Length: 586
Image 1 (cartoon, helix red, strand yellow):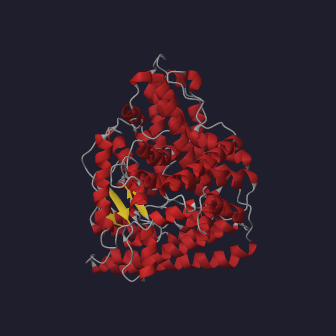
Image 2 (spheres, helix red, strand yellow):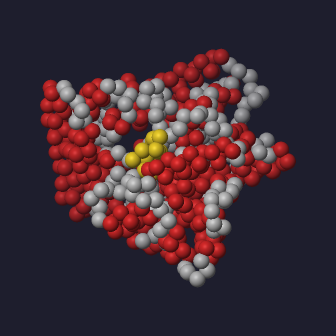
Image 3 (cartoon, one colour):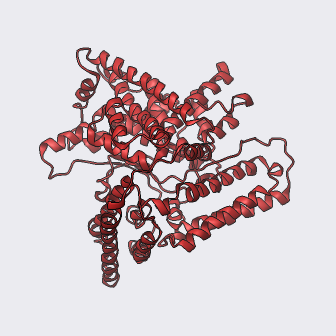
């Protein structure tokens, strides 16, 4: 089952080894200089990426858009390199422990951005960079200002559509990767459809006719620009398309090192991934045998999918089960939940339904007004035929839905968000977060909760096996992503072979298997779901060995979630006393 891509994540990266400077002398001069550099970097970082600022809840950036001209791109890269050089001259050993920790986060973020500019080169090689730029979802899904004020921001963004598309045509190389072009066409078409239908519907309560007139004109121009971009991609780029989308081993190794402080060779990670894939396939088969030994494992899984809510009960059942999952987390002392405020279960807004099965929408860490968190569940459409409704509801079978809820809400993404808000995290820690930590934590929670007994005592004796089967199904998908990512970008696996890998190893039908393989061409980092989970499991084993009889699962989780969302490699240094174990991440 294909899930919504994760909410926007600013992935931090790092090069240096982390050393907690517990005994280092402090230098007010060095710290003052570092704090100044920090503020200057963040100001410039968000000024060039204003949509990130709005997402974070900093509304001085509302209505603004990145400038994609070559002069702007060159200036931003030069700025990043300048800050990288300035940090390199700083006396980091003189910083206090917290400042030194922030130093590493900042240095990591800068090196990551330079990597994106110089090695990934999305502005030159990937037309998707521009296809989704006119994203104004946040202005209608979050009520952080009066609707008319948010509409003015939407107008300001849409006015820049001609500049964005002109920059795309000027910047992109003559020949581009076919999967990138085809996906960009889908994204641009989807953006145009959203502007022409869903956005107009969302703004129907606006009464200011003058403002609406201006919006209609600007909106039509933006739609036209997106449609023209699609036409240009089809006519100018598809005929010259190639299939050279792999990063290559050297760049992939850089991605691992910069993104997650991982120095393991891709071949070693693939070896671990394949080993875990075979182990998980055996878990899936053994679990299915407990439920029905007379059927193939995938047939058993399809059988339990028939146990699902009705069209009318989908949202009420999800609300009820969400509360039961939260109660399990609290009663079993899985992790401290630092707020009584619940995530609100709602139907996915119409404009998000094309790409969303279930998703968690939390406010940015600096949001002061629109602070509600929504757990969105996509219902069947009223006009669907009965067979299509039934197929959709099988994906919401009670077992899989509970596993997804664990991932998205308790104790996954929503609890992680609550802990970040309750922690003394610095500004840098709130802005930059690790892909492997965020998705690894949520994916780890799926297995951990079933291991801790979630799903037992709900009726017949097969309930536990059914929950394990649903959890194992999710794990198989993420393990296939890990393997396909490395095989694609380091070994040259084709899109067709990657599709077959998903079909053979996590038992997907052709269409969703192809979509997963396609995502791997432009999102090699989707291996971090499993890498993060495996890193957390390794950290837990090492922490448990360190604590001995005093080990507490709740204490382990609480300590993990109090430091923001750093690369898990850094957490090993914060939580483990044995320095020799710091680099043993998997």
